[in-house]
Image (cartoon, rainbow, N blue to C red; front, side, top):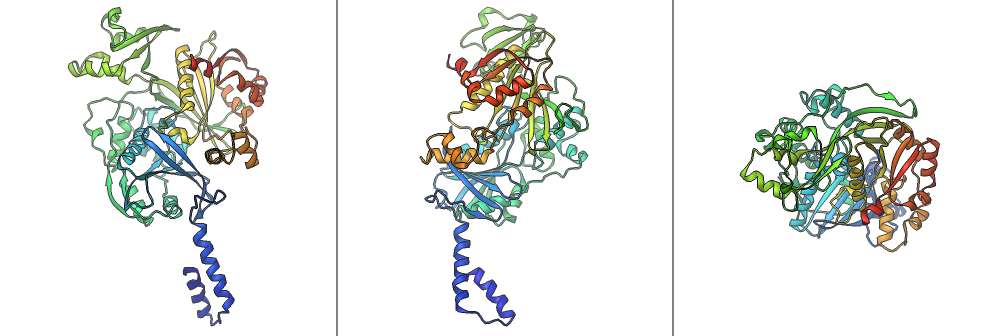
Length: 532
């Protein structure tokens, strides 16, 4: 009995006799301590706690790589969420493959391709499923622990330098350390879940090996997670290799880094005049992976891909590299690219200019704000440069941390992709991201809602939220639209919504639109367009 022994030693040192009743108290204290740190799946009201980590919920997560079980935790000091994504019989295994993965909203939710984070996330989950058992620890430690606002300032400086400074040099210029991440919560979760295996760590980062061992976890060996770089993450991966990460491919890649479509000018953080609770932190370009192979280019730029600026009609159609060509507003065209046919073409003609199509992104400008009231980051993605006659397509996009994983059925990501398509096809627009959402109550509330539904302790999200004692929708639409409004050239917009019913159930949403005097000239309902 550790507690009993510690107190006994102190009492004996002070010359105190030990009444028998204290033995009972000591035993109860030890019993309570051991029970408090163990997760009991049969006790629906149990909220096991160890150190600063508290268990919130568990939920099944069907993915493309099989069914994982997510155990959701929160740190009671820094309030960040931590997920343990378990697969197979992790309790009885003698060794487990694992990854300690830091969140990356830009690649995992927004489809950004300027890093390799989503590849590592999905690669680790695929490896764990192939091995039959393992645990992926997902930590809300964006930007090596500094958060998205500081990460965005890093990206702004790197892009302004045209990749002549690295991400690590940018951190130093901003007065930041190289890495703020900590992995103490992982050790505490291992104790709560009562895992006793040794670990095979999936990482390219030697610092993570040291972190696991310093937290008392046995690392049997490491396995690399490396993927071929692209033109948008090449410089970033080269800087990681130079900083000590186990990466070979960036140094031997024959690709060239691609610069932003226009210069990025860094600025000092400043208050948003129209809503002074928000500090405008950064602005930079995010290359976004095209949806369904549909790339967009101006007619003027097409001569980079097609000789004599001509596309023969007999080269367009099913089975060809270009399956479909559609003319768009503003002298642009959209090409649906068959990636398999393109790969076959490049095997025999590696220098064919059509090869550039595989790297053509949607360039969105990211604007990042810090909300001094909620402490959250607010993100607005802007596409194109609206002219006076344009009516930008606008979307308020909510997300959940669970949507960042390669889930088998993902309605939320499908709606985001549809919103991207509507904006890109029209030629200008904006998306406001409300992330880690839970309808404004946070991811913890959403996770508990999911658990209640799966375990049949409630039969609708409204019932779950009622049991939690919170309003069904806590989102501050009024405040969000004050930020979004700053990026609209006029009051005329096209609004992307899930369904007509959304306007009925989200009264505060409609009120915010009216308050900011936005004239919605066209409603785009995703559930209707996606069902067609």
